[in-house]
Amino acid sequence: MDMIRGDQIAAEGLTDWRKLAQGLHARYRVVGFGEAARFVTAVGAGGDDLGHHPRVRIGEGVVDLEVVSQDAVYRDDEDGSELHGIEWVTQHVDLARRITQIAAELGLTADPAGVSEVELGLDVTDSAKVAPVWAALLTGDPQSQGRGTPGDEIRDADVRIPNLWFGEVDPEGGGGQRFHLEVYVATEQVEGRVAAAVAAGGEVVDDSQAPGLTVIADPEGNRGVLCADMSAAQA
Image (cartoon, rainbow, N blue to C red; front, side, top):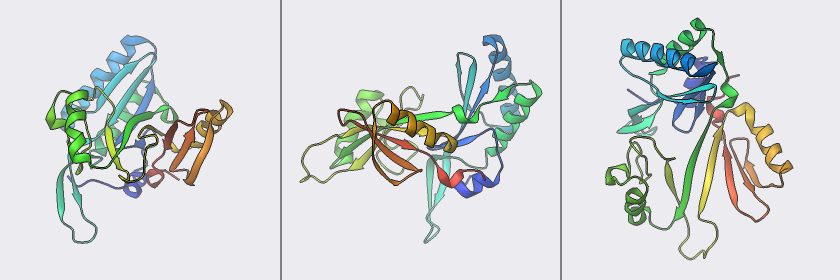
């Protein structure tokens, strides 16, 4: 299936869901593990009917879900050429709609503002050289290099660890911070999250691409990036 872009996702009107990084994310509040298990069982049956399933994590009082396709087709805007095997959202949004319906039938409350996703970033001069080391270190599987991405990004098939992507750095540029975190949140959370970080002693060092990207430094200068997919934000 073709990947779908932010404006198409927004048009679907999936009010329980938010687009973070590659996938659609939802969080539902539950009372106890038993209710969580019943919800997940119902979601599994619904996924059986549709032929695909979400990623699921059960936490304390919550069930977190991600809908993402492992083999989305990316088409170049200029020539229409195809690149298969991209991890992204496709027309499997029908699964998101079905999960929303199941949650409503069970009387569960959605908490779309509570979703989040963390990725690792590493600035390097040659990702092709360093990526095999990180694939081995993080996952033990060389196939995790470039899985679901056209680049050298490290993605674990079992989703045990955050994705590690590589940025470019000038080999003549000297040192500086090379590792950083990217924290993806729902669009409505950006302002409050930035304010909380600043109130805790952080400093906004780059908001030129805000609210989509905001770079925040701690009192020792260590930086993290707060991210939100504004293209998929619902009106």
